[in-house]
Length: 186
Image (cartoon, rainbow, N blue to C red; front, side, top):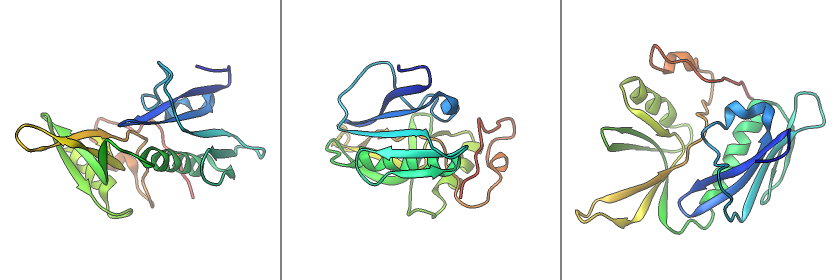
C-alpha cells in the first residue's frame, strides 16, 4: 500500500488505469473504488493531499493544473473529475458514454445525458426500485459485439455519487439505506 499517512492504488476503466494516492483520513471516500491489490502500468496520476491551510486539500494531477486549498467536498469532486478525464484519455477498447448505469437481473439500463440533466437522481430512483447502482458518470460499451449482435457493456466508472445542487441524500435512497458519508462542497 504505502506510508502510514497515505494510501496508494489504481483506478481502472477498460485498458486504462490511473495511479492515485490520498490521505488515510479520507479512506471512506475511496473504499471499494481503488484497487490496491496489484501494481499496474499507469501513464497518469492524481494525488489528493492535505493542504497548507487548516482542513484544506490539494488535488495534484499529472496532466492539467493543480488545485490548492480546497474544502474536502470540492477536493473530492475535482479529484474524481480528473481521474475520469485521465481514464478516458486515449481509451481504445470501448466507447465511453456520459451516462449513469443501473443493473437488475443481468440487464443494464443506461441513462445518458449532459451534466446536470438528472442522471444521478434518476439512477438513485432506480436504486429505490431495487436496481443496483453501477455509476452516475461514465459507462464504456465494448467495441466488440456478442454473437447476437448486441453491444457489450464493458465497464462502468465506479466513484462516489456526487449530487449537484441542494439535495437530501437520504430522501434519494431506499428507506433502510443511509449514505456511507456525506460532504458538502461549493
